[in-house]
Length: 396
Image (spheres, rainbow, N blue to C red):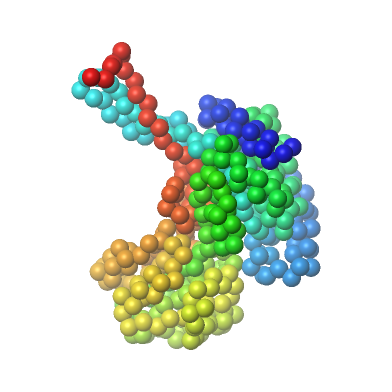
């Protein structure tokens, strides 16, 4: 089937999906959840093929971490489908109502965007995340994963297709595989309503440059954490969690900013080194511009919070910025001066995640502002329209 035919089929499916009752969406999600557990061993077997290729090709530890599926992660994907199903209904819901003096009823209704194209790298779990959120939000979705996860992606897609084929319209969830497919997808603006690239900067820039439909970019996470002089929380614990728990993910800490007067600076640095982190001190301009995705961190010392803010402004990727402080004025300045999809106050950067923020899952973390900013859950994959109800009303 050609890419144009795939896009047309997705558009046809999207028009049917919008009118499906919520019960059918929940049935499909439940079927996927159960199928993932039933075929768990097959998924892990296929994933091992991808991991073998990754090691042969000397992919970085961070990429291998993102590529890996274990029994625990497959179970987590199954639970994610249940979590998404249990989220509040979004499709068809009336979110605003007003009645004019002449009796005309005006309502705003939440509806699906239509067809979403998603191009992503490394993470095979995105196949399930994307499909589950598209189903919950009433959208059709076309997924294009990276070749480094081709065996895992195919198996997960196959399982999803088997699970939903008797419930959802044909073409609701589709997978394409080649690099040439991407170029063709980006031309299908007549059928694809939104393109979502999730991966490295080169992928993001390519999609932005060539897409003929709107793009919501899920770009790099060059995340900062500033420890102010009056910090009273356990800074060592928060910094280690932000940097070391999963260094290869987009909400991991990349640049640590320390106030010169904070008394436990050396304790933080010693703990990072003990955890195997290479501390870039002094760091260069190139270091500050790097999303490490590894056990490396750039270090910056400042004399006050305004210096910290200026540094973050210069290097921020608008993903996640965190502050450990007590002074309300310092915290307010930090929040009001920075442009990021998530500001964490006395908490780890790792909380900028759809599951952690109560969305059930995420399509990704948008670093754009239109149509969404931050983690995109089912609600962020919808838009609204007006419903006007009268009784023979005419405009005067």
